[in-house]
Length: 380
Image (cartoon, rainbow, N blue to C red; front, top):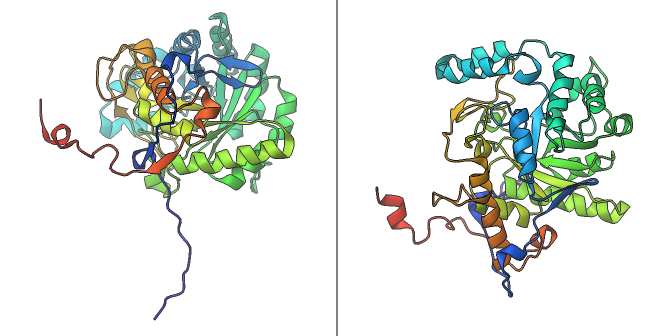
């Protein structure tokens, strides 16, 4: 007998399951325009560094800014809780893995110092680059005016899942429309993975939207909560919302795909799926200039009751400049990310990021294994 369906399930796709189709016309990679704008601020490359203590400190933010990208500083991290953040980071990376989660819970229970919030923003601004900072919705009302007054250019409001509507018995949810009017910085909100939520958030007046729930190398949200959508599908769904909102209002809201990246090929696929920029965590944590010396952990790891992250050792592979622009010393695509993106744009007939959105993609689960038996089995 035919069994009635309880739910209809649709197929969702991640980076490893799709491939790009070359275009009819090829182009020199150096002719590709990879610039990216947030409101009235334009960046040379469409790359952001995640607001994680293992990835971004003020020095790293200045360095990436001078290389053309944007690093997001976590204003609820160790740099705003401790005067000597370096000593705290050393404790975290030297602690045995079996003891690191309780340590992180203790470290991040230290109160945030408003004085340090202002100081860190000012430190980045003294470096002569745009300053982007991140807060959770629960702390945005209290700390965003401090960051704004100190000179922050972009304010990220991020949590595991963020929506325009929030129900609570204990407090009034954050109103993004009111926040946009209260501060002078550009407002970027995340994270989301669905068309409806993306459209509702765009209608609040934000500048950009961060896409991705649980794909990061150090994140365990998908295991702990069972929540998430693979990044290609999540990006495509939210890109449809962006385009619908543009038709409604004439205003363009950028989408930033956040997490799950390992190689230049993943970046190229994200842009073909509709991303305007990408946010990198573990990839950046592998740089020589990253503050945690080759270790990496997620923002939800220190949750006092339900940790959703783990500290991982990603190692150090090269300088930040080498990871972004080469020359690559490895063959796995984890270095010269911008060179890989430009080359993919060249063979896909995409002169800029918006043209990259129109590149054809195919479902191709064997894209990384077809014909690669020697690479898969041979040891060197």
